[in-house]
Image 1 (cartoon, rainbow, N blue to C red):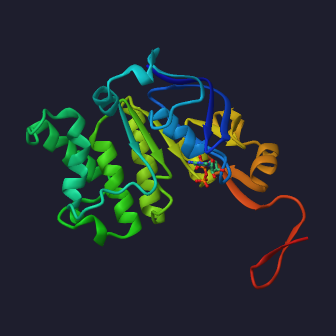
Image 2: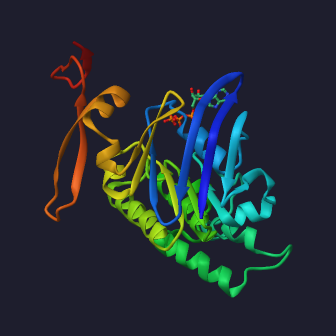
Length: 271
Ligand SMILES: Nc1ncnc2c1ncn2[C@@H]1O[C@H](COP(=O)(O)OP(=O)(O)OP(=O)(O)O)[C@@H](O)[C@H]1O
């Protein structure tokens, strides 16, 4: 029940992008993959989705080499949502979401009752029912992201890999999407989400994996992984911490760490 990277190194365009990544991910948990821009998060997710082959090391799903699995089996077991993913032609949202059922269908067969039910569930969970008949190019970025998230959810795979699934969403839909990812993990899926919002990551994720410069630099429960010293060293920020009225602990990135001063026009200059 695990998706694992064993001493993985990834090189792209002659550059080493990821080094010495040893990571075992378990199902039933929501795992946040965080790190500064260029840290290697998307590349790591692409390795987990078998879209990039490591230059060194192995990737395994339940102990079997991911590369040895038939493409159809991989597509049924691992659903992925990447930034910039599109469908490239004007399909309706319902048709886009139904693409998530392709790995389950026989060639040329239509949607079964089970497929229809999975599509309806995914659309309800992402609140795109009212957009069902709209075409993808007419959607706002957040609506488009929710439709693509619905497509990934409709696969009902053991693993759900999502690259910045909440970045374009408004606050209410961000909270909905995070709650939905957590619910998918509680239903038994392994969910790995690349997140830039550390407050959302800390609040919703069971485990946080931090990448910096292509290396894994922290891994643990949110408060264990996102220490003040890590936030300063890796992200260059300080954080406010506390407990919400319901007792949930929160971490709120607050200021740049080190000497910076904020001018009255809001522009930040090095101190
Ligand atoms: N095909 C490629 N060829 C060369 N370098 C690449 C390629 N793809 C990504 N990179 C580089 O690899 C590094 C990691 O990129 P990646 O997209 O994995 O980072 P990230 O952590 O997801 O960043 P961000 O938060 O900005 O989305 C970056 O320096 C990027 O420029």
